[in-house]
Image 1: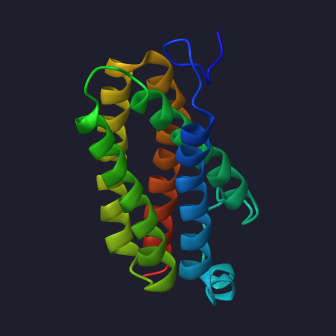
Image 2 (image 1 turned 90 degrees about the vertical axis):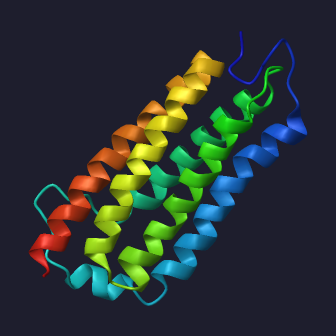
Length: 162
């Protein structure tokens, strides 16, 4: 059984679209939100457990592709999936917003509150996905883990740089 096959079929066009939306959206958001922010970010006091900056685009590209695959799997189901897909859209919008709050607008406290909301929305999305498609739900688990880590990192950077 392939992770790409849902109900015995693969819709290649839809698969590509569902993966590219978060991947390209994340890339564009990253470019717009972090333009002229790299030097400022390097000057911030960071906790000991902060990863090197090159880790972030690598992790996010993989996570965006995985969440796109999860959304593809759910959208291919025969039963109604509008609620699950709406949650997905909301969490993706919150995900993109966070970069602007933290990097472009330097609102680290607001970004911390927003990432908490984001984590809640990801958890709800994951639960809904798991109800519709077990594989899709499991595909979202690394995203929950990474955003949980990012929540702590955001909090620490906010407190260290007040």
